[in-house]
Picture 1: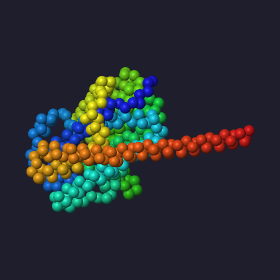
Picture 2: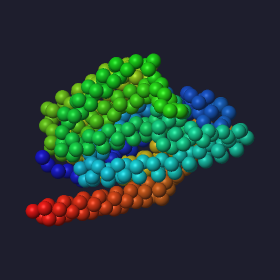
Picture 3: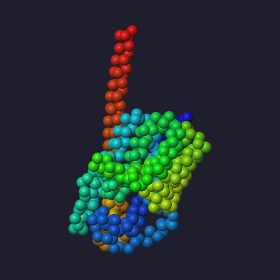
Picture 4: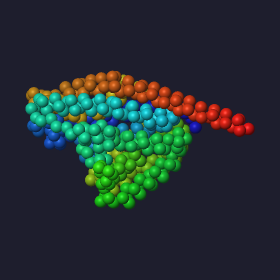
Length: 390
């Protein structure tokens, strides 16, 4: 088995393509086609501007840029997470993921809330945000506790967190290059999705309702994410091409079996189709990985993709709505809003994301060092006890 720990450029650039797809569908699709929802989240009156002509030019019957982009994000996460697992202890991995996700998410969410608040002031409407709902969103457990989203995009981050948890459980198998456990996991998820009836949800735990239906959906997506992990094991040489094909087919087939038994059943056939498109895009980039080199525009977008993903929705909607109210055409408002949102995402990346990532690594290293000292002392004590006994 070869060891490849260098940065996979193709995966990084796929992040950029994914966020471009997501921004496209939200700014050129959702904003204009779901006007009531948008107005509700930015505390504004309904948009009255006509739909930009470009929407027709980029629309295709079975293609939806939203699930396409998010599916690519999921596959990239599945591919890159083993790089961290192979270099870190389980404790370091968990701490690193906490610092990787939550500080930037909280900061970016604060920016989005601020934009919504400023929008409410501009439109002279009442700003209302339930504290409990906000806290559940910040913890990324809102989808499991019947709380509404506050930014329309964090549902995928909630799944990402669950993926990290499952990856930590499967830590040893992932480090050893084994993918057999993924087939067993897929079987377990199929059984859970098919055998747990919808009327069993919610489950009451203390004062809180737990949605089993949301867990079904999240587990299904986690199986999809582990397809990326299979590609990682092929990338490092621990899995042959033949086994890769078998396991990718098995995992994606498992996802399709689970889909009708989840909350996403209403999206059949187009949403699963776009996840298939996302898999094809990922496979194409993977096949061409040795020919893909640095490309500054995509590399830059990839570097800010996380904060951009969080803030582009609410902040973008609020900016576009104010600009159209000031007389700008839809396409003009989008052109003006784009560099503003990108600049905000870049600022978050430089001041919060980069700093907290390094902080997380330092804390994880210190924590790991303390554990090693404790283990060393324990071993010495056992050795001393054994000698004294002899």
